Length: 179
Image (cartoon, rainbow, N blue to C red):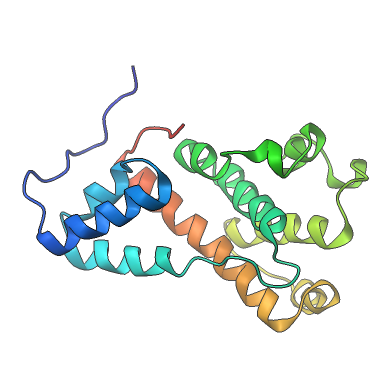
């Protein structure tokens, strides 16, 4: 049995937030505990809901596969069981077993020929963005344009930040693993 979160959701949830939870269930297909916990502080729930509603879809090189790679890389890099389960859903549709091992940090990207240069760079850049201390070498930042357009760079960086945000919130509230 999975341990409960550090706190229980409130018994009474404001109407507007109940609507947001309904939308969350429709999108994810399930009742996500962290969304219910955020209703303790409506501003946090609304802010997180707005951020999540604006999650990147497909933009150029940032297609579904690349976004899956980035989200799974961050989830593994920050070692968030909830995020790994949530972002790893249906991974088989996008990645091979060897690619999964790279995303999880169990294998070097240079050993897997099915990953292209942009995917390899996105994996290393995502890991760099969530590392502590945060230190992005100027030359690494400049190499972004070798692989991505300005718009794709913003999608890459905000996707990494979004997964990292959720990892911190989920872990901070003690949410059990997902999936």
